[in-house]
Length: 112
Length: 111
Image (tube, rainbow over all chains, first blue to last red; front, side, top):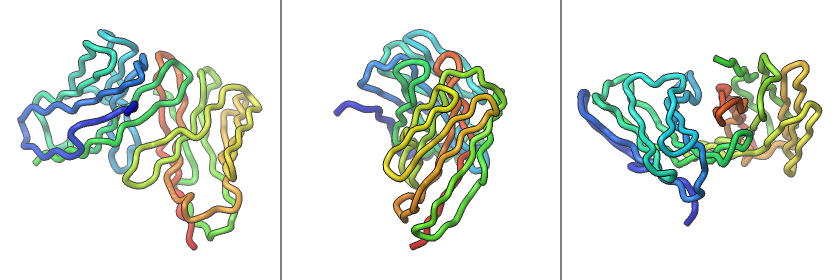
């Protein structure tokens, strides 16, 4: 089915570990985004991408790495996880500037 | 960083009440303003895309207006139902397709 999917839905890991969250969309949307949702902060942009091989930092990029070798995939990697990165992570895509974003179901990440 | 403010933070109404909430923003230099509905344990879904001053959009009992000159948008819900309970997000879409989200208004409709 067409859409945007995130995996895994839930992840528990330990501090210092590397973890990658996957995001895949089937619409061939140009723009893709990663957000984190924390109590009291709403949705905060981590990284975004305007097209394959083009990525840029958002509001809270420290500790995260992204890549976009293909239009449909936008993985987010925590290189050395910290407890402060415990959060719900949402991936989103949009067709072009001005269009609304379509969100994945989120990944709940807990770092012990 | 663009500051998008939503008020109130939360709202509790009785079934059948009509309600409205506000999204405020400092600049008219943006491509679009989006309203999203975000139900618990789900992901945000777009309700409206608003681009021009004076825009009015409607979907069933929910409608929205945009005033770019004074920097606000209103979302109205007529005759609230329990299924309207959700967090309503406002987002300002600027360059490179990025959106800055407000923290949302959480609506609870009591039967």
